[in-house]
Length: 199
Image (cartoon, rainbow, N blue to C red; front, side):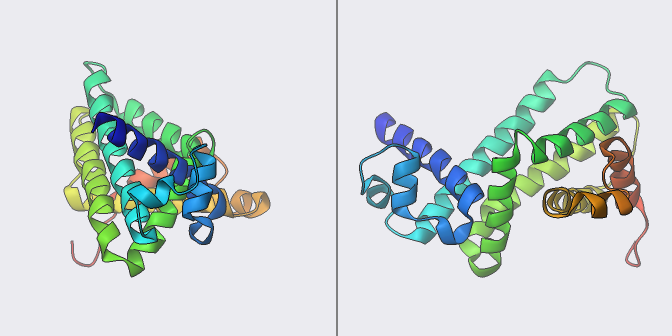
């Protein structure tokens, strides 16, 4: 069983790379076999349908994400300042466009897939819930008040902003004031805290 679980994790990691590079249309069992350097048919044996493969990707990413959030809280300094929180969001934005690009692109593909396949939504919900709870806790430790609904908006705004950073031309990012990561983190927080009609 451990060997089978290890192979499932290996294939899920390979599938994330394929999904990020080729998009949903390019995610095939054979493509994952090649990416993972496994014999043809290995992926189809463990994940018979494309939907089961997408569900495996979502579950794997959710597990990794929640583990990363836990590690963030376990490794945080005893004193967290407001500047620390802004720096964290700035670093996460930069990471989503650089060394964490594949993970983030795969996440965006999962969001699109979840529109049509409700079976993907639970895993995405777990990730967003972890983000919301983490944001509320971090802001509280930094002496800020962030309500859960504000944290939810912050998470959604972060997702949209990161997509824009990856997808838009440099001149458009500059014209829209989106090319300065240092200014974006405070702007995200300010936007999330703005009152809405329902507030």
